[in-house]
Length: 404
Image (cartoon, rainbow, N blue to C red):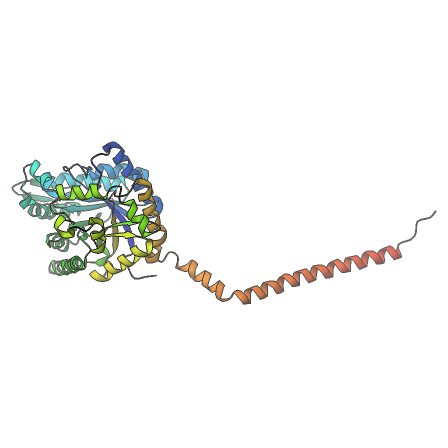
């Protein structure tokens, strides 16, 4: 078994081009989650966004409730709930209900909100979102752990607030905070003992930044009497697989440019700005600069090993569902990942490989013994047949002749 992450999942923002029918797109998202469950992916995180036209799931908890009825094993997380937009008392109640409805498969991902216009539309200054996230967490965690909370801020007030149901998961559902570049997310994770969801780039410089952020998380956790565990650290990246690198690149002609235009028109900072690649093809630039990994299962294995080594280890690798490829090619990509990449790291095929190698190493010996046994069986049969024939002949000789 290779050194690398132990678990694999998908981060479903989702991204859907403007020319697509939104109803069909949402149905396909649900089909994807069902397919991931069948392929053995461990988890999927579903985003919350309210503007921009591409990331069209507004309430991940509603999506998760429906997905839970169509799946059996895969864990389902909010990826993430934007805490500044919600009263923390109501949100805690909703997530506990979801934890019961999924019978413990719910994960609670939180963050400050990614799109500035989401906040501005409801009168929130984007400069206040990180503060609000921290204020929300300061009451969410105690509420989920059964405490009674009284707290007043400039945007919510709780008085003797407590939950009427305990979480299904004990002591509470798994939680994680997003981290892109600033240390705000990892500080919150360290303070409250939560996991970390990394959504930043994968260049060597970005990996060094993520490693430094993890150091801050560990330091903050220690200061608050907690311990950060790398198994609770998730790294998210763009990947697409095909049987050849040429085919993988060809697949992305379908939707990469639509997503690129969205990233430049709506996102606060496009990961591939025009000035970065100049006259070079933006997809080629993204591949060369480790923004995305496009190729065969072997290419993806090497990339995961590079990322794992670059940050010093983490628990779960998440593939960002990008919809850059046609639906059949996207399904094929996930299938290739499940068949060849995941077993490389999880060790699920090691025993059968050992069994094969052991049989191969002893093949000549076993074949010789098999042939001897087969020949012995044949010889025994022949001897038995010969005795039977001899006895039959003798019986004929001694039998009385019939009278005429």
